[in-house]
Image 1 (cartoon, rainbow, N blue to C red):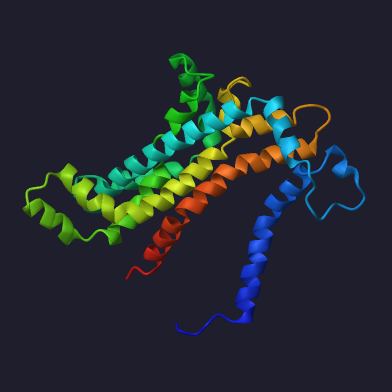
Image 2 (cartoon, helix red, strand yellow; image 1 turned 90 degrees about the vertical axis):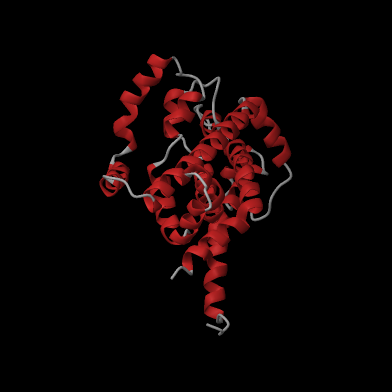
Amino acid sequence: MTRRPGMLTYALLIAFVLGSSFPLYWSFLVGSHDADVMNQRLPPLLPGGNFLENASRVFETVEFWKALLNSVLVSSVVTASVVFFSTLAGFAFAKLRFRGRDALMVFVVATLAIPTQLGVIPLFIMMAKLGWTGSVWAVIVPALVSAFGVFFMRQYLVDALPDELIESARVDGCSMLRTFWHVAVPAARPGAAVLGLFTFMFTWTDFFWPLIVLPASNPTVQIALQQLQSGYYVDFSLVLAGAVLSTIPLLVLFALAGRHLVSGIMQGAVKG
């Protein structure tokens, strides 16, 4: 346990980092040149000086500011809702005793086996009857609760929250809701941070359902990127400049919350 990693470990880690960051670097590389960069015989190795110009063209070609605001709204609301309800349901499944608990948990997990595409038509009909088609609420409401989030938080709280803490809170006169808020929520914070980060990322990069239910005049970021390449001629410098711009909020989020992500993973790794 005290031995330092060898050169092979560092070499593998460096190769993994370089391989993971190369797509982003390539997007920035192409996005910083003009439209003829893809026609060159040898691709450039260093960025050019046209990234700001291409970024400005992205905002002029599509409603990118509106797409960013829509994605921030959708991802933030969905993340907050999923983390809250998943923590609440995970606490109930992990620590409360009620009839049918295990069968209901199996049913929740079984819903993960249903492909998303099977529910697109009935979900679209429901959104149309509610008058939400074309609105971001049609993207937000179906994603407010996550079966995976419930399962994840249940598994996390089984070990992270000792039964003795709940019993002590109940003896001190706390109601079940106060016990959840003052005892379960602090214990669940690292796991909730991990769930929140991944929920925000998956919601931000979601393309399939927003493409169906949102019009071109009210897009999310991924739909706006699709609009950049909808013509007969694809300007890859423009498209990849937009891709880099759409990735920046995720990079900022992971830079700010990365400590919680690592602490949540490490706390789960040392259980037992």
